[in-house]
Image (tube, rainbow, N blue to C red; front, side, top):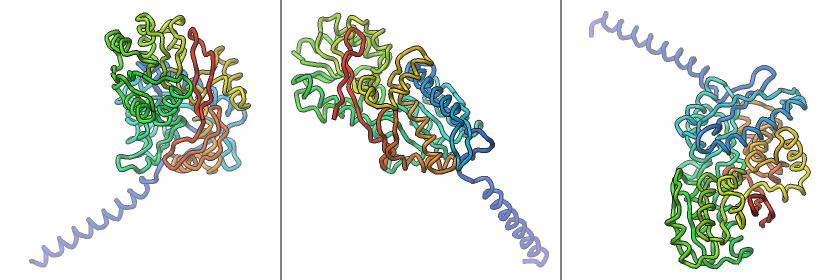
Length: 398
């Protein structure tokens, strides 16, 4: 190699090394994990189904979120290591679309620089946001994503930035099975579940695993279906004592209506996706009797909880209606984030995630909450009964 050539090689190597040093410095400056709160406000994002098929849940949750934030701000804000900071909500509509949910999560974390997110309401939309919130190191609390695998990676390890305020499908499916056996004394049941999401299929699986009677038939429907008569007619001929129908109010309301019109008057038991006033509107009040569903929040059960009573009174005063289940769950989600910030004495997103993972004995509207190692809340469950479209009785299931 010529001397002049050697000089060029050495010179180029020096340039590359120098560039590498500066690149390393640049990377060090831009890889600080998470979003940090600056100023006197704490930005909390809302990734919610405000339109589309699940808008009923999203709108209810939005009201619970706004009530919680307004209360906290009225009291001076969140105490961050001795300094009160007020909440600024950044609300975005994911339109009940998985792709939109992912985009909303990116907007909230990268553009809006929120330090925590409430939502989405549904498991599928929630799952869609996980890659973007994980990349940004910003925690999300879903008020109502119930699939058991929601907070877990494929290898079984916990998702570090994914939390929920509701119990899992396997818990409520097993609770429904126990209720069918012990309270309704149902020995022969048919299962009719929504197979368009992990929500319905997961609940059906959990129910069948726990139910000790005989499942005489098991069928599925898809979100958007309107005519359920053929399957219901087949159920009618099999001398069933009850139907277990896990799904969302949009389809379950029609199933109830068509079942009653077909002369099927046995109890119909479902899940928290039925815990919305729109269920009775779709089914018709006269058809919505002997209807039961698992729920994390029941007005009757909550009357013994002073925190819940306070919430119910404030909700009715603000919105002129009784507080639905999904508003209560969303309300708790905001206060869980507040608790995490105050416990960690920091409103930085990474520390908020750590604080959420350590929540214990949180006095929530939906009961006393302790977060387990998989970011699931350990909390009570109830079952509500509808008679002529109204809640007529509540059961505190243990």
